[in-house]
Image (cartoon, rainbow, N blue to C red; front, top):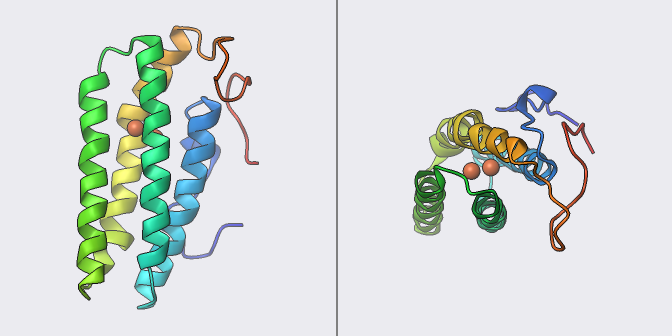
Length: 152
Ligand SMILES: [Fe+2]
Ligand SMILES: [Fe+2]
């Protein structure tokens, strides 16, 4: 279900073709839209942001594990960007807990970051992983589907 005022409209154009990434990204888009709507209406976003920060940490770990496994050439900058955004989320959480107004973070900065990160680092990483034959058959890999995934 896409809310009429979503800041990000989920579509197949956002897929990178790696099942776990696309699954996580779709959940991220739903969370970002929910937080943006709440922030715009002056509602509560702290609890949702706390959950989103955890979701991001888990997602980044999964991407980084894949990068290591396929020998991705730009693992350092991609990992550094993940750490930077986690620190930024911690900073926004702290500002919200102190009663700050972070509305534009949810309506502009975070959605723009997601779209740009997906289109650059995640896209290049997924492309490289495909070329290296991801997913392989090793135990512990999440999922076994290849190619682009539609909506759940
Ligand atoms: Fe990602
Ligand atoms: Fe990433």
